[in-house]
Image (tube, rainbow, N blue to C red; front, side, top):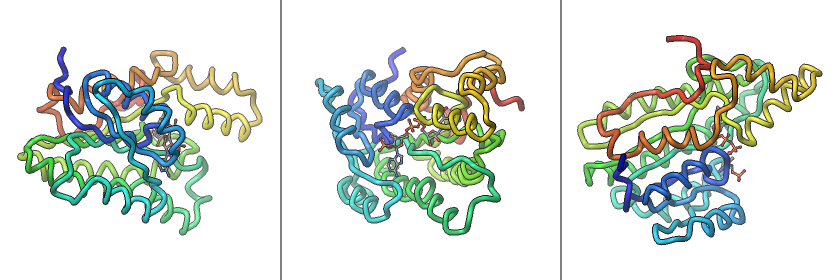
Length: 261
Ligand SMILES: NC(=O)c1ccc[n+]([C@@H]2O[C@H](COP(=O)([O-])OP(=O)(O)OC[C@H]3O[C@@H](n4cnc5c(N)ncnc54)[C@H](OP(=O)(O)O)[C@@H]3O)[C@@H](O)[C@H]2O)c1
């Protein structure tokens, strides 16, 4: 299937990470020019070098936890209404694990700004020009926790739901202008983030890491962790020309982990 991504410009945040990196590589392979968003210039340059054939790639430095850094990034993208980003993949780091009761007020606000406020700001900046061009894709990478809260990931479960409400509202507001807004819910995809969570659970429960990983896999009907490319395949479809009638959805890439219908 030709995804129709040739020549499209895609901004992928968290491009140096497991899921973001796989999405960036996939969109690049499908012919898009990818803007690699992130805060670590060395890692971004390394990936840009890898993606330096004719489709090209570029770098957008932005620390999602730093308001000033985001303002600078918006400036680099150009004035709202004139940006040339066709596809925006909102992605970044996850919050620290723990119970919701452990989290103090200032930490809620700080994490909200990093995980959610930054996405609102970037989305608001790129959407007007998408509407003018009558073509655009907003894709949020969230978590299975928005449908089935993950034990021990209190902040993630609570904060990401705000993004789901935002995305569903925005989807209806821009649907008539050729812009789709969707969210993808990773279950357990093998990346550094998942390794850190498994290690934290092993420490918390005083169990061997291998034991934790095996128990975790046993809760997934497919019986294994997902590969990052399996995740990126779904994102590539949702941001493509082919998904023009799909908007306002939450799509699971979880091997059947979420038990609800
Ligand atoms: N993997 C899974 O199974 C899974 C499941 C549910 C939810 N998720 C969520 O999906 C997202 C991506 O997951 P992942 O597995 O790809 O994680 P990952 O490998 O740890 O990658 C996280 C990415 O976010 C970037 N990042 C972190 N903090 C940032 C900041 N303040 N500003 C800019 N960039 C920042 C990291 O950049 P640096 O290179 O600079 O650190 C990295 O590129 C996370 O929010 C995670 O919680 C993942």
